[in-house]
Length: 352
Image (cartoon, rainbow, N blue to C red; front, side, top):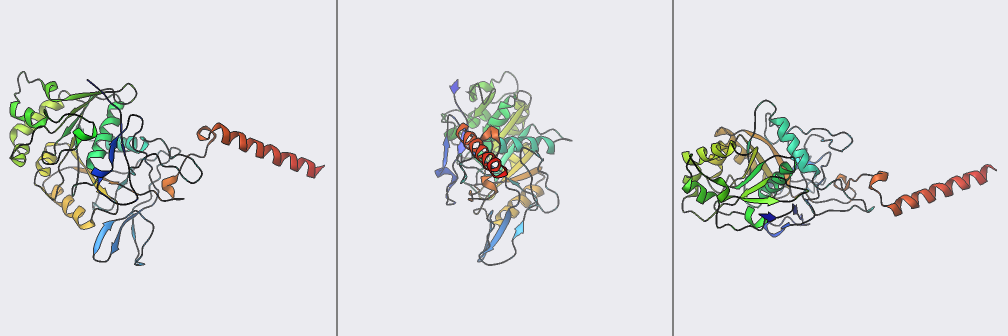
């Protein structure tokens, strides 16, 4: 039994590797916000990247994603389903550490975007059950592990019995995010799996926190194996996932990246749906297109995409915060009341 808490993701001003900026906090989720209009990508020299800046140094017309209205007032649901061109519809999720805007107000609730993401997944699976979800990306270090871990925590806090599996047997990362041992995990479980009398709890570690995750179980990747692709594409792996589906409400798999290794396709086929991550200003557009095309050709149900590692822009929608009395400090409220009283006094004297 491990006392744990939630994850947060620090998005630095540079687009450095996620592995250098991830950490684990006892207090906060990732601080996140959803902008209304974002540049999907921008051409720079011969390279095309996903870009969320409203800038274009080459003065070319940027391709913009649809406007997404996701404030707490409107509570609009972002369409997570891919229709037509897989790059046309994207979920924009910002991962950063509790940012403030110039007025000192915080962005809305740290885990709110992950709750939106969870809701979107539920709505996208309205006509078909998605009990096993794999989270992946085109290349490594594009936010898939952080997204899958935070999504698992949010789903567990929703009173679901959730299992998070690290299916990246080559470069595992989930055990580092939760500060767990990787000595026992998926590779061991697959080697010892039997349909009758198999005790899966030997290979998972329970994360307990009274305010965040009620029933979150984590299965690390386990010891290194010489043939991860063969292991993940085996009949035993598919039977193992089917065995787990009967014992957990939701299974989230942190999958391998699609382009560097062949492991992601069999993992995706064993899942009910796939969430595809692209890193802002880092993922090349062509890489994302090739990876998504490979997944769809293989018959994987790609339910949507989300953009990670979006930089916070000052005085932009990223810094949107609730300008309501409930979110202001007592000092701010008192100052505003004093100003209001002074104005009323001045008006009264003028009228007299």
